[in-house]
Image (cartoon, rainbow, N blue to C red; front, side, top):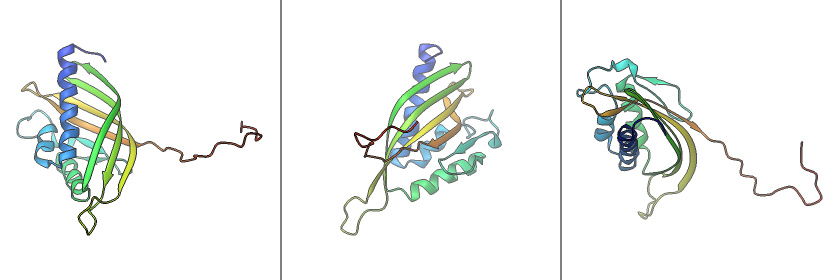
Length: 163
């Protein structure tokens, strides 16, 4: 982690707030965490970008927030366990990289029980900017899926390993 201790702690808190808002499905708070809102006039709307795993790049505050609204509308449950978190702060810009260990589920079953849960890994890069009010807000985000092989069987004891 690089940067002053206070800046790193503030960026870490802003990053945690992002994932908490996603877990709660709180679009209003999510909008406050992204740059370019009424509280942050020094960022142009088109400067914001997000890449969700498997999606094309989305540009502009309205497209970014619309994408989260669509994700929240189709996700009954989501929880993030962050690992490998690295934070670098340089002036008024901060870079956070991490691995998102995601547990999510679709709509509940007819009997009211939790729907099927699915796990996944995403490597994420979150770029924050410090606004004129001193608050750190998300400026750009990119998530890439991590492909994990599901081969539970190893080679046979007498089988040579592939080169």
